Image (cartoon, rainbow, N blue to C red; front, side):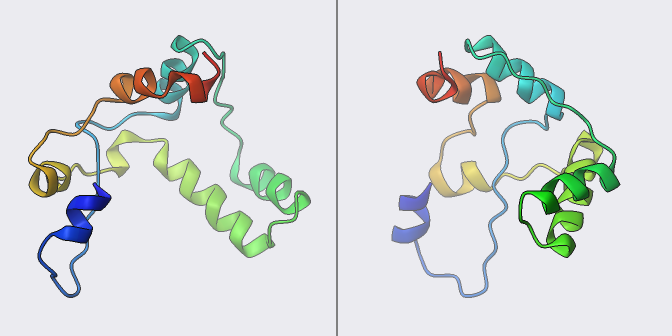
Length: 110
């Protein structure tokens, strides 16, 4: 993907939103990683609790709150829109989550 962007024609101001072939919930992502051999679970924390936990780990509170809100919103597949950018830039369809996890299984502890 980076090679396609770096070697292709320059389009000043172009924004490429890269997506897979479909949207996934946090729970689906956790299940896919678990299937690769490393059990993980997504714990859906309320925004105030997640903000407090991130701030306790040293993240500035305003950033912690923004991240907590973003994570809450991203958990809904309705939040995401799919694009054709991966295919447009590379000529290949985007990989599925399962294919990505399988390709990087060692990174997930399998």
